[in-house]
Structures are given as structure tokens and as C-alpha cells.
Image 1: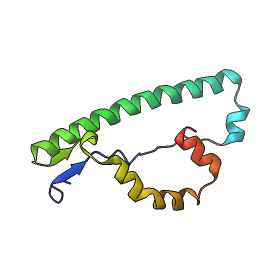
Image 2 (image 1 turned 60 degrees about the vertical axis):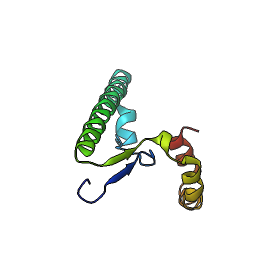
Image 3 (image 1 turned 90 degrees about the vertical axis):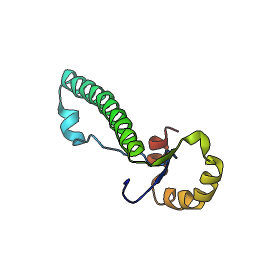
Image 4 (image 1 turned 30 degrees about the vertical axis):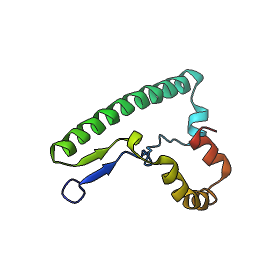
Length: 108
């Protein structure tokens, strides 16, 4: 990144997702204790993965700064303008998805 981009704006507009999936019938056929154990393991893994991702982000920013990339924090950005500029794209893409999926993803 630093070879081609000398500026980085911390917009927070990218959110990576990794899904933990299993077949519903398989999960439903598990004994209750096993289902709880799978759910607990998934919750533990989620917390761990988020901590690892935060550490990787921090390490990456340190490297970028050392390479001379100017990093603009979110507080220095016109986020309202950014949202306004992206609104039509957001509306178009959300319309392609089931409303319940969008609500679940956005926590609504």
C-alpha cells in the first residue's frame, strides 16, 4: 500500500466479515449441550479474532507511518460529506439485499 498511496483516511467504511456456518439440520440434531458448546466456542473465537484484527491494524498503521504515509484520523475527515457522497450507492446496493439481512448486519 505505501508504495502506491501516500495518504490514508481512516473512514472506517470497510468492514471485513468472516462467517461461521454450519448446516442447520446438523446443528439442530446436536444434543443441547453440544449446541451450547459450539455457540460458546464461536463466541470465544469471535472475541479472539477481533483482538487479533485490532493488533494487526495497529501493526499495519505503524508500518505505514514508518514508510511516510500520512494517516488522517476520522476526526479530521468530513464524514457527513463522505456519507452524503456515498448515499446513492448505499441505497442501490441495500436494495439488492433482503431487508432482514441488512437489518441483522447493521444491528437494527
